[in-house]
Image (cartoon, rainbow, N blue to C red; front, side, top):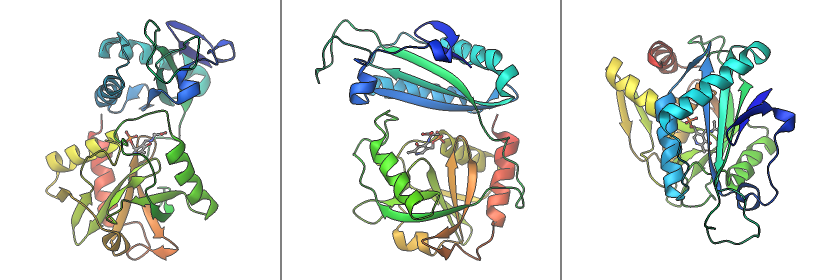
Length: 285
Ligand code: PDD
């Protein structure tokens, strides 16, 4: 495939990054994953805003504008669609750059490493109960750091939680803070439905402000009269839910059918999921 690295488009196997790059040594960088179907990005503007927020939080100067990112990402699709197909996500990573020595302090006078590439993703999700991939999850204590709102490339906390799920035969893990309130999953935001109320935890330093979460909240509020709230959700409420959904750029809205081996609601894909995914599919662009 053709990738972008520091101002150039080049074959993936020719792209080189210094071992002194702080992205490698410290995980000192920010990333994004932006999905596209048939050349149309989903949530492009909000993804770039979140990228810029993360870079500002790390004081990484980059000189990129939203328009420059757009041009770069459009070009990556154009260069890769013939070979990789029409459903592509663009991964963007900006690290603080490479210094000559390893030093925790921010170095002065280095420029950031900007890398982006496109990869094939599953076909566009459809609002069809028979076709949607469903999930089994476990639960666990959220042992990550207290800056989970920053989409940092330092993902070890998330990786270890994700693997905890895999080792127990699950595909995600629902995480709970010290007060036993839901935060998010290892790589997804979470929605819980009970008696017609659709709830998701409020934004804070404990979770990533997911773009799918944002779009779904906006769409449900603008285009339905469903009862949608951002509030704390307890462990007990998760176990008693009628429906649980995972949201992320690659999954859109994914139904969870079991938690810790017990069925969620009646153990089948729910009617609220169908209503939500229908609206999301209609209004997401
Ligand atoms: N994961 N929470 C975490 C911890 C995430 O890593 C992600 C995304 C989300 C969902 O965010 P969004 O709706 O903006 O994709 C929530 C990405 C896709 C990843 O790491 O691959």
